[in-house]
Image 1 (cartoon, rainbow, N blue to C red):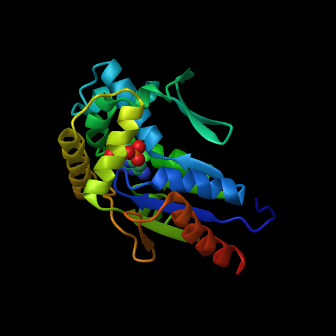
Image 2 (cartoon, protein in one colour):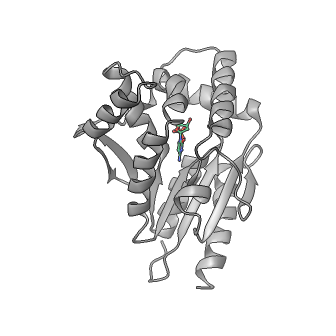
Length: 229
Ligand code: DC
């Protein structure tokens, strides 16, 4: 663990199931930083919208829904726990039904505006590793270190499929792949803050790297920056 006063902001972006959150969590732990999985916030909004049958294309209905939503993040044993209106929804937001719809909800500017404002407040104290789609480009364009994570689509499919199997969700590989590809398209072609590599980001291809190797690369980069400020 590394302590001290020289705290930085680390932004990690990339496609779904490339290993962003796993890397971000491990990196934050080693640096003694806070890890924020920003996707969980979009997932919590999606859960609310689905439970209340909100028409996401109706701006008034969406504005009403957003006024009723309060999202909080807490941390238990280094794991983020997501709260929606004081209910622990950490499990519920990982369900496949959320995976199918979350990218659509994330295209909405009203939703993004709220989430980005909250995420920026979380970064005020620095000492943070945040992962998502627009962290290096929109949330923290001034981040000290930006990583852009990529991986082969078949490797990503396999990883997500194994995660789902471990949770007892029976789903065909092809279906997982189709969902990932659809989310890639929606996330990278939306008008408001599309997923794209920031010009000053370092790309890490995790296809053939173990989590330990990925962490070492990210740690070396982080330490070289922390050592300079
Ligand atoms: O990282 P994840 O799979 O939990 O993200 C879920 C969705 O949330 C993803 O499809 C796009 C959206 N998202 C976003 O638009 N911006 C972020 N910073 C994080 C996630």
